[in-house]
Length: 254
Image 1 (cartoon, one colour):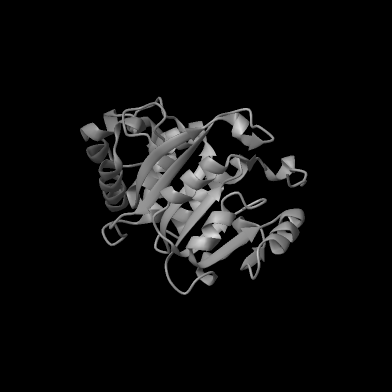
Image 2: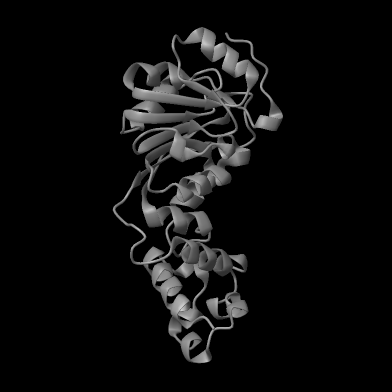
């Protein structure tokens, strides 16, 4: 057994079940131009490195970096904080991402993927169960939120399976889930991502309020806010509704 002390500040929980590692790897579709974030001691890496063409790893922990370099010959590894990495500099083409994501940076990584939505063609992540459920949730559910809307705008999402705490070292206090996102064909030609993100965030800030109240700070004309969509709450709108709303607000903003 590898003796590397996990670091709480990095949110490390090393997966120690070989069958689950294989299951995560087999669930990932693309095997060309693959980025693994935070491999730790290589629970997924040992399988990915055999099956992937143009495989890159990004790891921030010195102990893990040293271990991985000893364990795997000619490994393509960058020691860096993933949140500081410029995705445009990693590959010469579009790529996919896989990771047992530290819970404390999962939302930031998802927003980074959204910022690079035209580069990332697929992702497979082992994340906190509640986060996975929230992201894959459909409109009309209380778990439906900002990341649900934004990720579903650009990716076809699947909630694949759950993982018990005891499958990790150290065991987290929560259950985990594996989700997969595959880039869909929607582009930004018919709407602005910047505007969509702004409207979605404002709408969910006070999710119990109607859109008429949530978006009051935009000072939209009453002739526009009389539309029935403004009587709804954010969780009642699907992706298409939000795209329509962001486009119309852009036209009607003072």
